Every structure is written in C-alpha cells, then in structure tokens.
Amino acid sequence: MSVSKALRAALGGDCAVIDDEQILKSYERDQAPFAPSAKAAAVLIAKTIDEVSKAVKFANQESIPVVIRGAGSGLAGGANSIQGCIVISLEKLNKIIEIDQVNQIARVEAGVINSDLDKAAGEFGLTYLPDPASRSWSTIGGNIATNAGGMCCVKYGVTAQHVRAIKVVLSDGEIVEFGFPTKKAVTTLDLLHLFIGSEGTLGVVVEATLSLVPRLKKPVTLIATFPSITKAADAAIEMLIVRPSMLELIDKTTLSAVEEWKPMGFENCEAVLIMQSDESAIDCQRAQEMALKHGALDAIYSDDPKDSDDLIQVRKLAYSSLERLGVALLDDVAVPVSKISQLISGVESIAKKHSVKVGVFGHAGDGNMHPTIIYPHNDKEAEAKALKAFDEIIALAQSLGGTASGEHGIGGLKLSAIINETPERILRIQQEIKAILDPNKIFNPGKKFPL
Image (cartoon, rainbow, N blue to C red):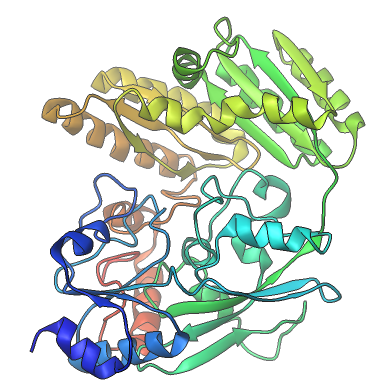
C-alpha cells in the first residue's frame, strides 16, 4: 500500500491527503534557492490538531520522515521536503482562538498569518510586535520554528521574547503544552524555548499563546545619507543610546538597485541609515546630530506617518530590488554591532575576489546583516563563484565573533557552517535532546544540526 493510501486509512474521515505529482512539487521547496529537496510521498493539509497527531503517530510507527510546512516563506530550506516524507501543511490551522485584552495575550493556531494577528489585536488597542519582512504571509508557527526577527527587534526582541506557551505534537502523537500563559513561571525547566528556533526537528508546534502590548505611537523616522558605509555603521552604533525601534543600514549596491527600479533620489551617496523612534521626536533630533557628527551628507526626520512610510520604502524595497537583477542568494549573518564595519569591508573584499555583486543591507541595531549575492540566471560559472562567496561571508562573520544565521535558520542550507561555530559537546547535547524527543528521527531529518 502506498504511503498516501496508508495515511488516509490511518486518519479516516474527510482528510486532505495529496499525492498528485504537480501538487507535491509545489510543496517541495521554500524560498532558499540552493537548499536540498526531494520528492515527498504525500502532503497532508491538516484541518485539525487531531489530524496532525494521528499523522505523526502513523509516521513514527512506520519510520516515515515528517516535514512541517507553514507558508513556505523560509530562506534556509527548513520546510523543504525530503525523499519519501510526509509533508504536513499547517496552513489551514489558521484560527485566532482568543485575544485576551486584560491579560494582553493571544491564543492562535500555528497557521495564523503574522500580520493578521496584529490586525486583529489592533481592534483591542493591542499589537503583536515581531515583524519579519514576510509578516504579511509568514505564519506564527513558521516564525516560532525559526525564531524570526524583523526590523523592530532592535528594541523589542525576536519571536522568542513574545511566546508564552506552545502546544506541541510529539513524535508518538501525544499533544503536550510547554510554557505558561502567565508572564512568569519557573516551576519547570524552560522546555518551551527548546522548540523556538528548532525548525521542526523536535515536534510540531500547532498552537501558541503570545504576548501582546498596547498599540504603539506612530513612529518618528530619521533617514541619513553617508559618503561611506563605514561612517553610517559607526553612526548606527552611537544611535543605540536612544533605544530606536528600528535601525537599518543599506549599502550603495542595494541603493543602486532600488534607484534602477524605483528612483528615490539616492544616487549620490554610498549608504543610507534609517532610524525610527516610537517614543519621542527628541530621539530623532539627537540621532540627527549623531549622524551629522559622523559625516552624514544629509539627515532629516519627520513625525508625519505618511512621511515615515515614504522614508522607509527604500529599506522595504532592498531585497526585491536586488532580486530583479538575477538570482539573489541571501545571507543572514550576525556579528557584534562593533564589528559591522569590519564585516562590510570583508564582504567587499570577498565580492572583489570572486568577481560577484553583493548588496548589503540589514539590521544595524543588532548586527544582523543580509549580504545578498547577485548573479545571472542559468550561469553555472557565476553560480559556483556565488556559492563560494556565500560560504566565505559566513566564515568571515564567524571569525568576527558572529554566527551563520541571525533569524532565517539553518535548514539544509548551512549545516556545514554550524560545525565551525559549535563545540562538539554542544552538538552532542543537541543530538541527545533530539534522541529523547524524536527517537526514530522522523522530524525533519538532515536539517538544523548534523546527526
């Protein structure tokens, strides 16, 4: 009996198990261009948590690999299917179960879209803070799986800081809750945070209780242009003293790509720094003075919401502008903020060494930068150079005391890179935890950490 037929029999009822070749293909990859993938045996579009539980129990009994998928917005291949696996899609588990205005929490299923939750919270005068660039289509479950960041994390932290509790399907199908809806809880080991950022390798997060906060004031936005990206990076470090809610850096290569697509007047500078404050215009005034002290060509700010939306467009267009130029191989390294200038200088040297174009942009406030290598489609020689540059950029970040991934995850794309920054004992501890929670190694094998 085929896997799909056996899975249907195990689930019973009106389950959505798919084995059509074309549909399987559409669930094979996320947004990472080079992460490995292979043909799944079946896709389950789960409609209930009970279906997820039964499917996982079946897969565990039959030793069939399981890959969990949300919206497919990942950038490291974490949701890519592997040969003969069952892909469990959580896209239909999309109910906002409760928004508790008094306790300022939301309880949601894993397939809820990030921005949909924020919009619903807004009806109660609340907001959900984590804001990955994909928030308009990425899911809460996927955000938890990768511990997603975003532009506001310089002040408010990444997803992990906003998760109170999760409901998880374990490898034997049992449904367990980790964490508490309260703000404080120390009665158990912090098992909750084992699962945040685990990329579907320990269990299936099917529901989450999340922190909300009162809706923030409209931000004041500063934009400053610089004659060099190192001057911009140095200014960014000083601006951290005013606790910005956003602090983003964009280099000349990226600015040129934006100008080529949608001219915005950034032809005559080498870098742009964007800062927002959701507290006071005085913060932006102080930041303006800092920018000028560090040699800014120009620095302006506005408290008008429309101006703010206009000013940050150049950052929002960064990746899509580079992507228009060819294949965009997006890196996701993080270094101490004091080392951003060294990272950027090193990236420029790597780009020159391999004769590739690299645009650099990212979160200057926390050192998480996104060097993006661009090369022509269907050019194997250029592709080989790009992949070498990609690996060298990761090694550079690690040599500066940084890490291979700040927010996109490891997936199947960066497995070799993590060995360089992870002591053998730590790798072994992770493998031991995996063995306890997933003894048959069905959950996303070959992802996150080497077995």
